Length: 122
Image 1 (tube, rainbow, N blue to C red):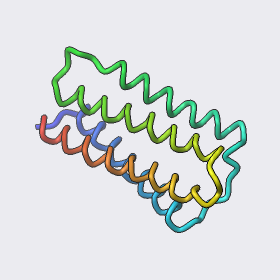
Image 2: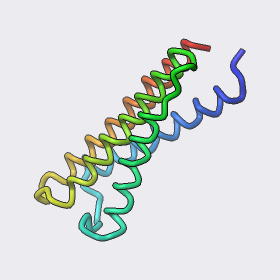
Image 3: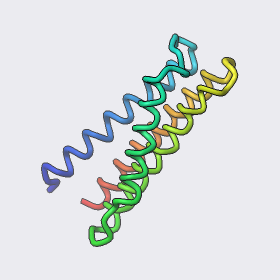
Image 4: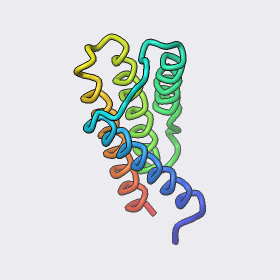
């Protein structure tokens, strides 16, 4: 029987799947209007990268193997997606949709893989 902690983490992964699907949709259909060179964008991407690195390196060694793998996947995906979104500041405008879609795809795959790992380990 799953605990409330596991159910909350599963709900968290569903949120990442939805955010990833939204980014994927925005990137593929070109429905974006923002300035990737603004200070707010740099703060957002730096927060994503730092949060991802903190999660990656903060994965406890004494927890179950599946839980540690889920934390590593989550941290790595946040860091890579943050770097992709940071790259928007220097990439040509024609690549913006591709970079947004790639970040969304990373979040969708992260949500699916981590949810599968947590469902298998419960």
